[in-house]
Length: 183
Image (cartoon, rainbow, N blue to C red; front, top):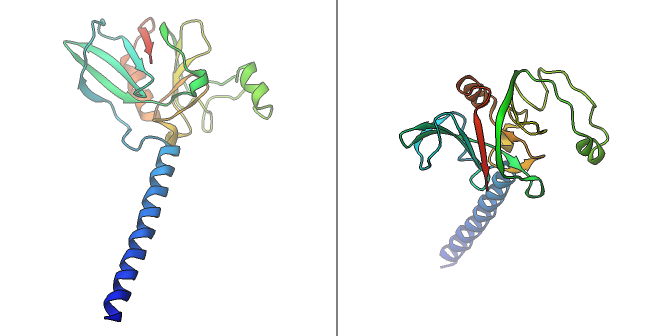
């Protein structure tokens, strides 16, 4: 009888430990980003009357869509701006750069004085391997040195992508392409 009770207690203790471990892992995964956001474009059904080649960013989904027409689009996972830095509206791809240089904005440098005023493109550059500049703004769609941030709301207003995804998008999108950002 004591052996049965002891085994029951041990089983309950193991279940409790496992439960704590799983909830801790879930919390950690949430902090690092949505684990369902994997690199690579996904061909998906897409409703909307957008001309092919339009980029549609849905910040609430943390997804970017490249419309193809005929109800189809390529879908990519992204990181979006922190809630206070999110924006919506219309823009366009005004420039494209491979291995872009980075110049943190004055606002970014005021918030973090240790940031450099300039960083040459290449390994370690926060913009990753490609950048698509949006209109006349300071915002971009770019790669990242923090792939675990994809699926989170953690940027300064730009849209981060896995480096392999931003290379794919860079090749598919032309300068002048419309960009629609919605919450």
